[in-house]
Image 1 (cartoon, one colour):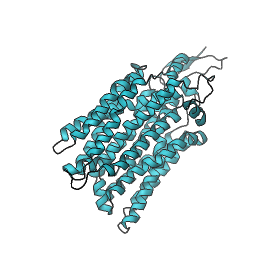
Image 2 (cartoon, helix red, strand yellow):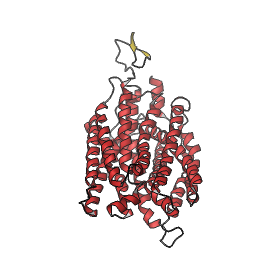
Image 3 (cartoon, rainbow, N blue to C red):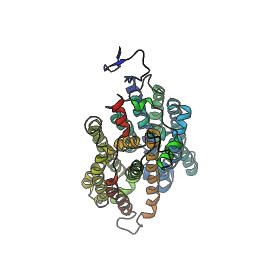
Image 4 (tube, one colour):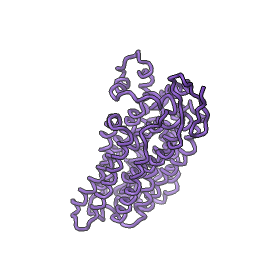
Amino acid sequence: MVPLEIADGVAGSIDSYSTQVHYRLYKKRFVGAVALCLLNCIGGMNWLWFSAISLDTANAFGLSVTKVNWLSNVVNVVYLPVSLLLPWIVGKFGVRRSFILAALILVLAAWLRFAATAHSLSPNGAYALLFIAQFLAGLSQPFYQVLAPKYSETWFGLQGRVTATMVISLMNPVGSALAQLLSPAVGSPRTSVLVLGIISTVIAPTSLLLEERPPSPPTFAGSRTSPPVMETLRSVLGLANPEEKDRAMTLQERIDFGIMTWGFGVLVAVISSFTILVAQVYAPYGYNSDTSGFLGAAVFIAGLVGAIITAPLFDRVFTHHLARTLQLVIPIIGGAWLGLAWAVKAHGLVPSYFVLVIAGFGSFMLLPVALELACEVTRNAEFSSAALWFAANALTTFFVLVADDLRASAAANPPSNLNKQLILQGAFAISLAPLVIFIKGKQVRREQDERER
């Protein structure tokens, strides 16, 4: 036996005459993770940059509020087909080239957006450029968000995979939170667009730091290539060959995946649509853009704290209790979102912050749990992540579109409030409580990794 020195100082061994795979961790996995975090963060900033300043943007460019909402909504719409195509794109071009392409698109979007700030443009001309820029941002965002679980599986071991997925995935909401804080703070909407362009251009070259895969895999799951998309889709639909036990999903796994996809979609969509509409939710009660930005950021900051505290616990302590966590926490989150409809009122900042902190803490704590558990039941990180984020963006689009129909009339008290919208979102969230009872969440992938290590 020849000793093998692991890059992080963990000792292993290798048989010189054996073809057995030997698992190894590399310190450069952190370099790629940091780059992916930064890129995911800037993607979140591009998406929700206009949400906290939607009313100011409408006034500055001579647009309706509905048109400004579509600057965020178009990202969700474009996200849908791209997320479905992403497993095929990565399979054909590889992870590294896909990341670099997405970064280039993001830079192009940033400066098209800045071109729209020219005062010589008509409102329609400026809006066309803003819309195209947001369309391009929607093309790039899925690459960094959907592929987070795949990067974790490829580069990180059993005791770091959930944490890595958490950190990378949450950087998109962190970017959204920064957008809520920065866009009202840096000046006029036109000035803020320039700031966003500079930040995007500075961050984009970090995509060059990302590598395709390590020389040696970190785990058994990391050593395997994901099955083709159509094969996984057949398995999800119950059409796979039952003799392929390592890839065919059981009936319970298909039920689990369906519930997780719907539940993930609802919870992410409730947060996303709230942050898109936050200025319009609170403006009828006399709150300005700065206050709306702070309220939107409170969701993400609380969520980040919750995820940072709990993700290492899921990696090292509660490793086999992911499904039970969903069953315990989701009813609390649903109750918080439903309660928000009664917390939003004049002089209601304290109850609003209280409810949003609870909802954010719980929701983002569950985000990496759901992504990891979906990988477990499908054995395909790209496919499962794409499906979950597809559901999230589809439902976000739905919630934002129905907001105009649910908006109160100008004669209401207060005028143009979105109380019905908040009740709808809360009802969707609380309806998940009975569904998650049926999740079993057998962690097949982790069990394989533990046997093989």
